[in-house]
Image 1 (cartoon, rainbow, N blue to C red):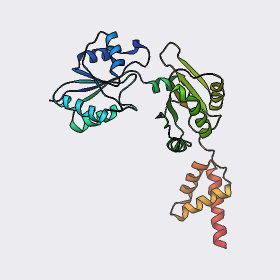
Image 2 (image 1 turned 135 degrees about the vertical axis):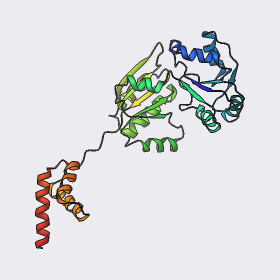
Image 3 (image 1 turned 90 degrees about the vertical axis):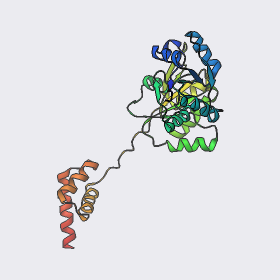
Image 4 (image 1 turned 45 degrees about the vertical axis):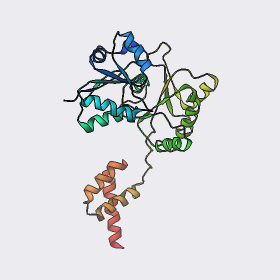
Length: 283
């Protein structure tokens, strides 16, 4: 029988955020696969946990993943951790999860910190629907293809950014979405100097022209506003009703449908379409 892979979320700054269940899991597994074993060792030492560590990160995940999978198939249990946050989210851990799924190895998530969700919660922007976009590519073509694909995105968008690239990213976001688009810049979440700055993209560009970005950032950007529907005349609405009737709809049903998506009066549409049909028959 195979072992279990546990995805253990780790603190993104404040060690007090590691849950009791996460501590119990780390203490119980046979070994831990870590993004950076040096960072994870500090966390384990803080909680007095002694477990074998293996390296699993972006540059070795193909070979390391197979090695971890082999041990899982032999019955060992493993905890996958990143330096901070939830494994497998915008992270090579997703490949290990896929390998486990293909081989029938159980995978359990031990919930905890996620910088993107924390930033969204404090952003002051709509949270009902959102899209996580991660880090923008440093390659100009890929970066602008990504941004162009989001110009009409109506959901709130979440980006990650490092301090040394923040100014360039803000300038590109302002160009892509317009300087008046709202943004929340959340930095150093859960840490001593945690800060959320809510402003427009244009204001953010100006602020960081004069102030040095410090710490890791999560940028929460408002989605695009729905395009205003062009005002429709009664005559144009009646033409739509007649077109629906030509497709087999009854006059009453066609008038109701056009009224529903134009805001025009159903009764006025009915009368105008009826008059239009009469004129067409007379001619």
